[in-house]
Amino acid sequence: GAGVSQTPSNKVTEKGKYVELRCDPISGHTALYWYRQSLGQGPEFLIYFQGTGAADDSGLPNDRFFAVRPEGSVSTLKIQRTERGDSAVYLCASSFRGESTEAFFGQGTRLTVV
Amino acid sequence: SQELEQSPQSLIVQEGKNLTINCTSSKTLYGLYWYKQKYGEGLIFLMMLQKGGEEKSHEKITAKLDEKKQQSSLHITASQPSHAGIYLCGADSGGSNYKLTFGKGTLLTVNP
Image (cartoon, rainbow over all chains, first blue to last red; front, side):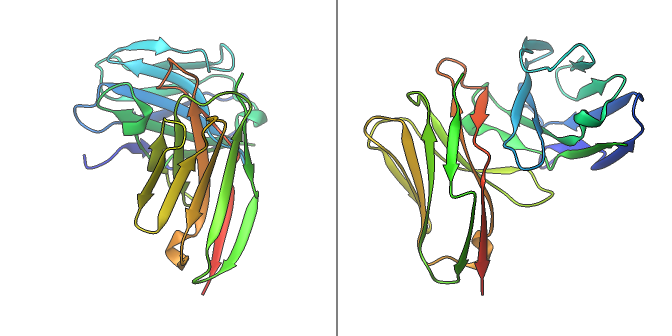
């Protein structure tokens, strides 16, 4: 596609439910990043993929959060047993190399946990 | 960990006016990035600064990094409504150029 695509654009879920957020990066980009942006805050790093592997997952807040990129393209961020504090905009970015200066961001998925 | 402080938090200007947004780091900056964000949209990369004293310009936007590499400013000349949005500064933690720490952003409103 022309840009980084994230689906859904909005997701409302009940506390305790499981959600999956999808990111479709720009074709050919080997690096993929997930960030989380809470209201009134800057984005916070979650995880970085180089190809299929998670090169750095140090930003994942706890073991309820997990992300995969099985074929080195599309990535899915999975959140188990959602809590109200998980409500935020989840941003995905991709780049040709692992350098944020070249990263292109998607429009984000706004997750609301009620 | 590195922290970035942006000022002001919000700014309202009249179209045509100049403005400056500041970003101050608690540690020496290895790379300083400026992004723009509109509501419901992703981040748009504006500029990256690495060297002390470096200055870059794109159209009416100029970004500078001070000599000590702990403060950056973003200056907009003759602002237009299209400049409205949230401006974010981000810094890499030196050696981890894929993982940025961001400030909280500056909300810019430009009144026609």
